[in-house]
Length: 64
Picture 1 (cartoon, rainbow, N blue to C red):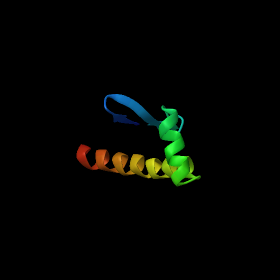
Picture 2 (picture 1 turned 30 degrees about the horizontal axis):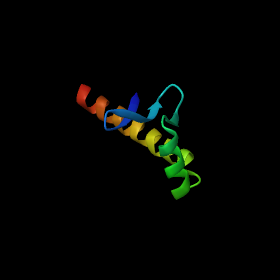
Picture 3 (picture 1 turned 60 degrees about the vertical axis):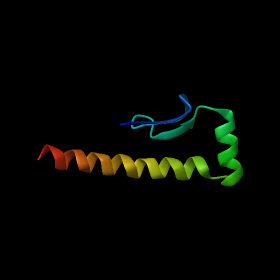
Picture 4 (picture 1 turned 135 degrees about the vertical axis):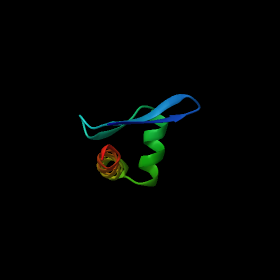
């Protein structure tokens, strides 16, 4: 499972199920998010883990 966030065709964030971590790909995105919420990476990673589980459940439903 991979999530990529893009802004104006530039990758700004990345998450995959192997590392289970949100990774900012642009310094300005990382700084803007940390200015808003110092725990942003941790909370974003947890949110994406939840999205990953939801996607997995949906795929199981579709397979049936």
